[in-house]
Image (cartoon, rainbow, N blue to C red; front, side, top):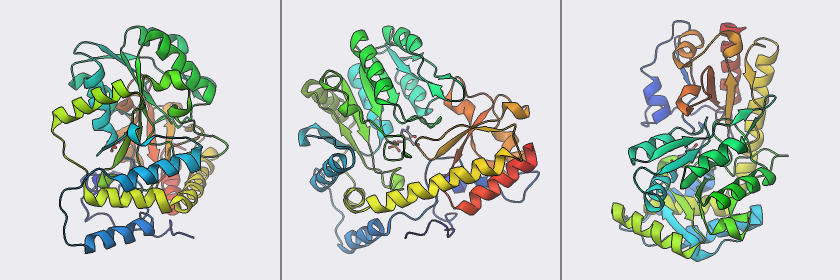
Length: 387
Ligand SMILES: Cc1ncc(COP(=O)(O)O)c(C=O)c1O
């Protein structure tokens, strides 16, 4: 049994989530609770902490070579957890998925080309496209009866104007785990429209049964010829600050173009602490993840249970994957960027839905990677403010 209940003070660690919240003031509460950026307030698995201490005990922190132990651990993880075969030569290391997506955009598109996204979606996608001088082409998701789906007509039209699609699977912030059929339909459009698919699968390990993740790598040989699949232990095991991710490019030609663009940035080899932690996490921390998932499912239920009777105007979407609850505040009369109002009235810092682009007005995203007591307090505050 791991401990997810005991609070851990992060205020003196330069934590992005906690540091910026220190400057936040609420009219209603003396403290503002940070429930925004997607890392967990849980201790990283003890096996990883031990490995970090062991590695730190070796007094030389020089340059690292290719992280073979991490590649082997990741390959085993994919085989054992998902039945997904991965070849060693498909793999490369990146400090993050965001820089890998930027690299793919530069490698596979030209300035002015269209890059498709499906908002509301993780906000850096749009920024990366714009900052690299490419055109954002949106195929917004549709809410069908309280569950988001792809609008395949809109996606087809967007891909007709794009050379690359950034697919978020599972989807942050709306919590969907795309089914195999949905992903096969996306793959069919990508093939027909001849677009490269960059699958951001950073949340793929964070899935609640009966939902089942379908790694993009398993969707068939034809998709693999146009696929960059980005995985990371960062969200899964709460080691995002260490910066380690694994980029999988099965096609040799795409891999060479991706590597060339990576080289152009001058980015060096991996951080020696990051690879040690990441390899240990994949090798030994599956049981920790299973407990963390069960705990966060309980957090989601506590949130829904705490709001359904007391603040029925707030609608919490079903959570199939990610530990991020997507909440519709429009029934309580809110619209646009709701972030300031939530700080002011409920003493909670959530990510305003507007950050995630089209379809985010009147919504907010709440991070469930924290102790149950914090989720219960958040539900109490929301009920008090909007009940
Ligand atoms: C969908 C998605 N992609 C990427 C990231 C961040 O990736 P990285 O820190 O590896 O650059 C996040 C973090 O919240 C995310 O939700």
